[in-house]
Amino acid sequence: MKRETILVIGANGQIGTALLPRLQEAFGFNHVIAADLRHPKQEQGRFELLDATKIDELATLVQRNRVTQIYHLAAVLSAKGETDPLWAWNLNMQTLLNVLEVSRQQGVKKLFAPSSIAVFGEQAPKLETPQTTALDPATVYGISKVAAENWSLYYHKRYGLDIRSLRYPGVISYQSMPGGGTTDYAVAIFHEAVQGNSYDCFLAADTLLPMIYMDDALRATLELMEAPADQISVRTSYNLAGMSFTPAELTASIQTYFPHFITNYKPDFRQGIADSWPKTIDDSVARQDWGWKPAYNLPRMTEEMISQLSAIYQPLVQTH
Ligand code: AKB
Image (tube, rainbow, N blue to C red; front, side, top):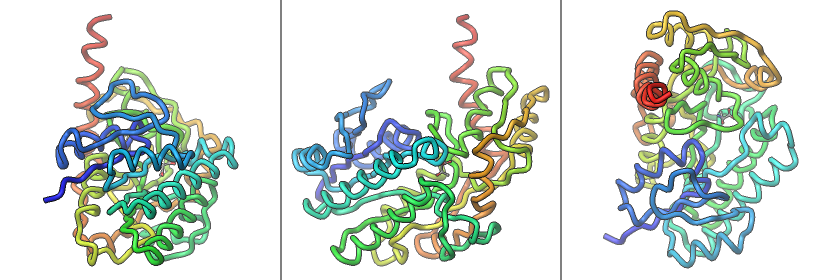
């Protein structure tokens, strides 16, 4: 069997940090190259500095290492994108187009370029949002992801590029913090709860949003990438669901471990973004095509987040 060489772009981010060990386990430690703009806090194996907006830097890296698969995870997320829309658009689109073009030129065999529930806007049904519906996003991040989905389909149809994608809901993880998203509250809240603090939530108590636990998100990603090409009927991006909950429901779930934990609700501009997104997602096409099924619900996710973060914070609390 020919060995694969995997390149993860944006490897220091929330998903990259958790994905690297899984890829190293699957393909061999030395067959996975992490790349990002800055060195990570803790290097987890082979690492290369990369500015993916520069096509020559990317082309040289791919060629020198004979990269066969790329996971393109670099993006400016929804909330941060709204603070500087043109910068967010340029960064999201330039990196994607560079990855597509270098992959085409150098015969990269498989490419993963995630999308998001942010592609949906006012005109899509809010409940059980279907795979195929109106895409009129309210954020520049969402606009860039709709464009990215269409560019991916174009490269697949025109050049035969084997590109695969998931519309991630909010991803919840203990390994690292997300940065600049509207769903970030659902990670930050655990860090405060475990340290014995209250949490100031930037969304209203009853804001129902689709979420997924990192373990499920990684499994979905790897299962999609492993599926035979003829089972992949969607080359824009698959709807993906894990669970849906509100900040009030998440608070109640955390209170089963920390009964005195309190969330204060102070909605800001991110409320408007959340209100434009689906509440629940219909991922039946992913289930049919490559057998997707989530394993984590709200209680199971809460239990694991609290146990993992307690292990991280406990020693810190004791040494002070
Ligand atoms: C965000 O909140 O921007 C992201 C997303 C849903 O894509 N987590």
